Amino acid sequence: MMATVNRESYAAAAEKLTADTRTATAAQLATTADEILSVAGLLRGELRLRRALTDPSRGGDDRAELLRSLVAGKLGTVAVDALATLVSGRFSRPSELLDATERLGVDTILTSADKAGKLAEVEDELFRFGQVVSGTAELAVTLSDPGAPVDRRVKLIQGLLEGKAQAATIQLVAVALAGFGGRNFESSMTRLVELTAAKRDREVAYVTVARLLDDAEEQRLAAKLSDIYGRQVSLKVDVKPSILGGLSVRVGSDLYDGTILRRLNEARQAFAK
Image (cartoon, rainbow, N blue to C red; front, side, top):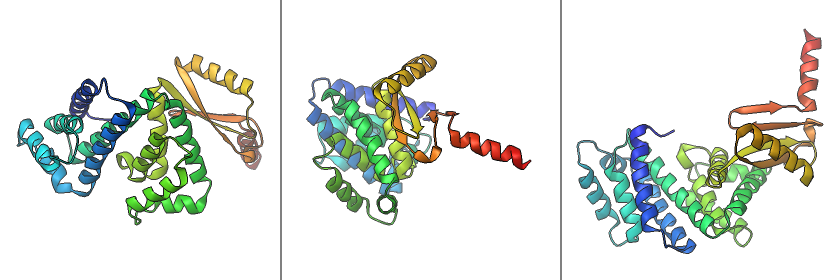
C-alpha cells in the first residue's frame, strides 16, 4: 500500500493524465502507456536517477525539469506532463517512484482496454495465461528466470500470445515479466488480474473445484459471494481433481476450504492423535 505522500503524488499525476486524455482513443492511450512504462524501465535500471528524481532537497519544479530534459523529444507531451507531475510530488523512498510509474502505466493500459470495451476479456486472458504458465514447468522457469533479459522473455510471450490475446493483455504480461511492484512473475500476474477486476468494480474470487462448474452453479456461487462482499464478484475457477470434491474459495485474505481433501486430512490428523 502506498504511503500517504506517495498516494497524493500519484493521484496528482493520474488526475493530470485523465484530464489530458479525455478525448484520446484506445490506441492513443495504449501508446501513452508504453511511453510511461519505458520510463519505468529506465528507472528500474538507474538507482541514481531514482534518487535524483525523489531528492527532497530539490524542489518539485526542479525534479520535473530534470525529468523533462531526460525524455525531451522521445515521448509524447501527454506522457511527459503526467510523469513531470509525478516526480514533482514527494516519495518516501526512491523505489516508490518506480512503483508509482509502473502503476500509472498499468492504469493507462486498463483505461485503454476499458475504452475499447475489452476489459473483461483482458481480465480473463490474464488469469488463463497465468494458469497455463503455472501448469507448464518449463515455461514457468523460463518466464521467471531473473537471469534472462526481460526483452527476450517479452519476445517469447509476444510469440505465444500474438493474435490470440488482446494487445492490452500482452502489454500487461510484459509488465509482469519486469516484476510489477517488485513482485515475482506469478504474484505480478495475480495483482494485475485483481487490478483489472477492480477497474470493473469487481472483487476477485479464486475458486478451486474437482470438476468444472456449470453455468448455473457459477451464477449461484457468484451471487452468494456478491451478497457477502457487497459488490460484484469475478470468479476465477481452477479445476484440480486432486481435491476429490467440494470446493475452496479465496477472496483477498479470506479463505473457505470445503474440499473433501481437507476433510480427509483433518480426519487423518485426528486419528493420529
